[in-house]
Image (cartoon, rainbow, N blue to C red; front, side, top):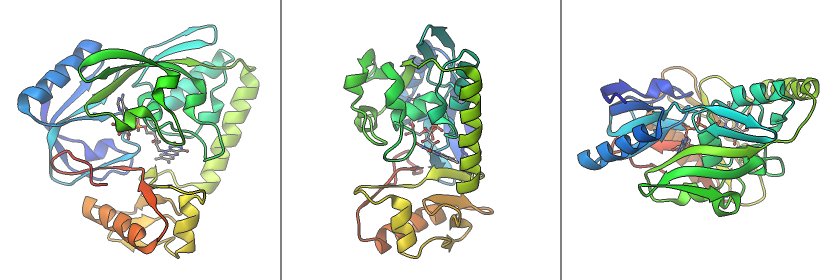
Length: 288
Ligand SMILES: Cc1cc2nc3c(=O)[nH]c(=O)nc-3n(C[C@H](O)[C@H](O)[C@H](O)COP(=O)(O)OP(=O)(O)OC[C@H]3O[C@@H](n4cnc5c(N)ncnc54)[C@H](O)[C@@H]3O)c2cc1C
């Protein structure tokens, strides 16, 4: 594993906001993961885990941390059981499995890695299918020890998992999925339909997906819309016209503008809203 200094990390996220990491590495083996953990402890800096950065924005300037991108993506299929490393791109996985008559199509259109998806129990909306539906167990470096958690111990709920509440650093490494059999042609047709639906209803360029998560039953986008905030701009950050829970970078958006728009939404809306997107401060801590 090679640790580099002052590497641009904002440009590695889908929203393209943020500056450089003091230290940066790409890791592909369990030994790399252990070494990254040791390095961050020695330097006494946070270890920040990055999948594809499709739900992350970094502060501008230098982030005083070791940012580690998970590149491990080995996949093996045995019947309906799929062993996959956390750096695997979810869309690639869906396509590869379809070729083997395995159906993970419900997760179509969610950018990012398998690790990111498991961390946040990514999936369809509140009443849809989430990744937990397929998870059998998860192997991770937790508190410096390799552990395998069966699905029940992952405590999945809507966009929630036990991992979100663990003391950092946590590195999800490998997941065993159980994926149902379905004819390849049917799976591929379903993927096409779901992608088309996404294109019609959501922006997909320079955004990090849904920014907020409603605490109650009303979806966040409905609350934002009802408050008249759809289309609101601060600097070059805009609440998308197409989907009121998506923030867009419409030019040269910066971190402070992105934070300001989140604060405005939270201040305007009286119902409680959680911030789902990850905002990383210059000292490596989370803004919200
Ligand atoms: C256009 C668009 C549409 C989207 N639609 C959806 C949707 O329909 N449903 C949905 O759920 N999400 C959606 N998202 C959000 C995003 O795709 C998901 O949150 C995704 O799972 C994030 O994966 P990532 O690898 O990019 O994570 P990152 O942004 O890199 O990280 C997100 C979080 O996961 C953690 N993480 C990632 N990998 C690991 C690992 N190996 N070990 C430990 N922690 C890890 C990070 O520490 C961080 O806290 C959308 C995003 C975009 C841009």
